[in-house]
Image 1: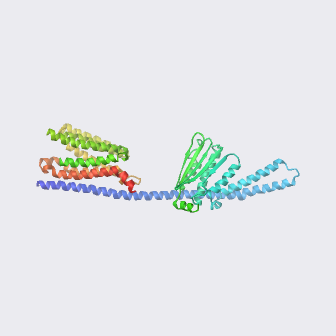
Image 2 (image 1 turned 135 degrees about the vertical axis):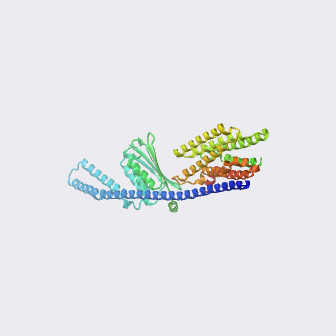
Length: 264
Length: 216
């Protein structure tokens, strides 16, 4: 073999090896590209499945709420109304109405009103034309009238969200209020809703004993997390030694924001 | 002299780019790369100056250089790998290289003759690390935009460089003994091409974070 042949063989082998490395490199690139596409597709499918599952859960819950609301209104509400009517007849038939009876009738009247408001607030059909600010204000007035605690509510008026999304947010806030009332022994609660270009921020703060005793994995909080996830947002709890705060951040869809600005 | 200048200019350009993007280098430990490039330039210059003025072989300088070089490369792969299995493999590779390198130095060539066997084994092990890196990257279960990953470009550069010079370095003894590449012209062309490719890809790696941020 001549010198040049040996050198040619070495150079040729080098070029072949480099080309082989290049081929391997592009094969890997192509494989990874396909892999990326597959992973993206799988993630989209997973997300869609989760959304559908959550949506079904919410629908089942709403249907249960609706049935409960109807039952409260049509059955228990009717029974209480009949009782009130009978008490009214008794009151009229008595010459000296005892004060306790008057108070009992008044209390019963209040109970019927509370029951109506409660059944209304969990009735899905009624919620189809839902306005969160309006309904939350009614709910807050109902709670404030009980004089157990005071709730302050600040809001921008209307919200750039669809009615069904507002229902979900309403349920989250309801859950937060229930937790504050039942567990934290709060005296004051403040609910703030603010709208930004791309976000809706909801902050619920109270001066109770904090959420130390409540597990963040409990059913109520899990529901809140799931509902927030369904809206594509995130929810965080801050639990200092005294009081607690819940921050909910929800994305605003572009078309909703434009619609919101048009009707402003 | 000419090849030294070409080589050093390429490394210098690459080093300047790494300095310009020093604070943006991700992961942070890639900052060590700038210092390694400085070490490479100093080794090249020291080798030339020593040989030029003392008229003696400068091989011992390059023996030190290849030792640092391969340990550095194995080190960055070790830091990059997430899987314990790959980390352990890299540790084993480093150990195997060190044992072989010192075996050749102590029992065969001595410190003042270039350890070309050690260099060849180091090259093969670096190619193996590059392949391991690609396997780890491409079997990842998350969506990876590899063009934004500095290490992807660095591993690609190393793969092409060591694959490219592997055959020549393997037969270097035979080539020198039979005076097949008089004046080292072929070697010079190969090295300039491969250096251009490797340091070019390193440079893309250093700016890749910024580059892809702007185009996204």
